[in-house]
Length: 402
Image 1 (cartoon, rainbow, N blue to C red):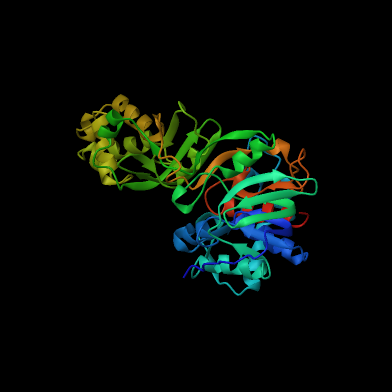
Image 2: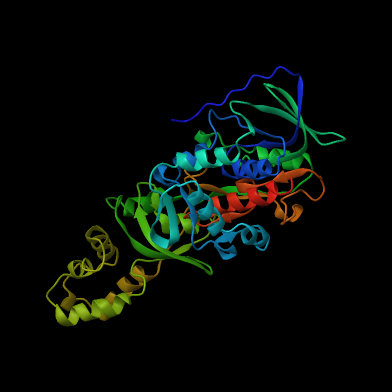
């Protein structure tokens, strides 16, 4: 059950060493590290309970990191920025913390680690690490200002001051979880650039005429390779009523921009023409669609052969026609018209420009004492626990110095 943290303040103004706005993964991680240094810390969040995105992640079991996390699994306009933090706090460091708290976990495909039980265990662990830190939920921040000695944060529960201010409010993905563009507003207030945010790890959508050709395929899933420029992923693809989804599409969506075409290979590592040619030699009386259904889901095989006008038997189908069909199977080129947007995006691509931040501390170089961590920053991980690892790493390095 989510815990509701409410504190009553009697003083008009309360002083802290650090105020962290945002009680998500990065904010709580930072609070725990600062707490270890015996800093006086206040965490503010407008949600009813801390760690709401943690709670819903991984189907409620929290895909809390990935064994393969490394700088190459993150994208940013400044790709080297993440290197320092990821080296100083690795996935193995976080795994050690999970084991220290006796949380059982398991590995799934591609190095993804999940709790055996509830994602709430991760939030409880972070709160335990931050024991003694004041966490104030259901609190709206109305104004942030710079003072001679630090910062003043005004809220609907009063005003607070601190030497250091950490912004850990994430991006606008999944607004029902209370996400917002607050971090970007604060960054711009203090003259920092923001890389235009866009939805990442999100299903892609298509125009109505294209969708009509996919009618009846919603729910069909298969492993596929999706390519955009030099970027390529091979994972499960899912047809939906609005377009394409599944892990492989979510992965490529973080790289996709309006107008980009993507190329899909429904048979990764298989030469579709050679397979069809072999079927023609060994099973000449079989219908093309029936032969193809030995390699692909039946509904998709039937749809592809209909598109390629290969509805007859293999013996009656020319090699030229089979080559055309094979090209559609191995190199299906399509152009999405958009994505499902922030509503279903798992993360936000873009954010506070890292060129304005220290890669070692997350501090704004032009505003001493101001820090940005986690999803608020222009660092985005691949699907599979990488974004949590960035939250842990950026929160850790910030908590070491703020």
